[in-house]
Image 1 (cartoon, rainbow, N blue to C red):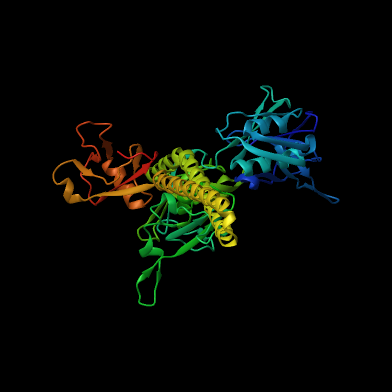
Image 2: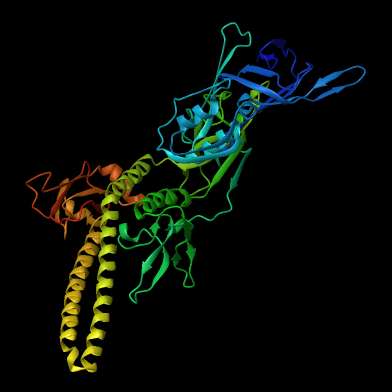
Length: 541
């Protein structure tokens, strides 16, 4: 391992030839990004010096805290250095910045402008967000942007060919789910003894209740009150989602029966049903299993009998935890690493962000979420129509009531006011007619709201398939425009992954009767198959 030193201006100071200790500590995770180097050597290092090394890719560290110890016979230097991206705090300041349509690439251009750093634009696509930066250094702005976009900071260094101090520096972002797929695997509970496993304090949920922002709701008595948004309008009237882990993580009731382990999750920043349902699917995936981290010396990670010395923060490995029944098969990520550059086999890694390897389930959840998002504009428009119509109806009824009272007063006052009363009565009748029409419009719009974005589950039993691979079934009130998929239940999504159903209706195959759907499967299902139909328009077939 070569450690090359330059001063802050790029002038060479030579190599650290006899390091006693060289420890790199790296942590990934939004604003938790950290990359430091701790040395013990006999070379004088000054604040601002740059240390270049090749650790599975070139890296540059800047000395921020040099320490020295001298006596009559010896000299020891123990400097602390950080990834040189921290110098953005010293070379850039954002006095005030505010834009409503900001991409990660735009932020990188802003932060690196005029500095020795270049934006690494090979970053994931991300929808623009509103960003405000007020009186902040460049490095802190970088961390804030990473947290806001849900991305992680990456750096890349390209030294000149002669290794004379010239360095091109790039800073960028990456998805938290990124990192190298190493293909390595370790098993907890069988062949690893020196592994620390830590559970987060939160409980495991078998049922989640997601709630969004509060909105005004008009009651039957005409008053309004604030109530939180729920997923009921797009989840068959249910305000919750269930996982299939009741037998493992539920609670016993008084009668000994299994009860759900419930979790209430507030998303006060979500103000639409579609977005709340989208987030609820992610919440169910996250909170229906224990949050676990694993920490082990790198010697525990073996592959072909060799120590794996090239693991780095962000890399992905496979984990099998056999202490669970059935065993958990997980996709783990190296969230932090303490690497001894002089003795790599003594390094320590921490695995976090552990998720079950259910690619089919995740893909299906995203597809269902996209279905809801497609229907969202129509759903919102219909909701607005219904709300407006109800408001018009209420105003008209109130007006009619007031005019009727005036009529009664006029009739009882004097016969001479009869003509005025008659005119008022006519106006009241007209107002009542208007109110009735408006109320009809409201009811029609409400019925449209019930259809738009609504979902219906249709069950195809194993017996219905018989010896065939196709079943046709009539569906009541089948939407004219719909998307079909599996409900967000793990057992069904696994079943869909095996059977690979294709759902067709009369529009896609005229041999299918109108008002019916046909399910063609690749293999006969081993359990009842549930098809969730998501309506995208209010029309019926």
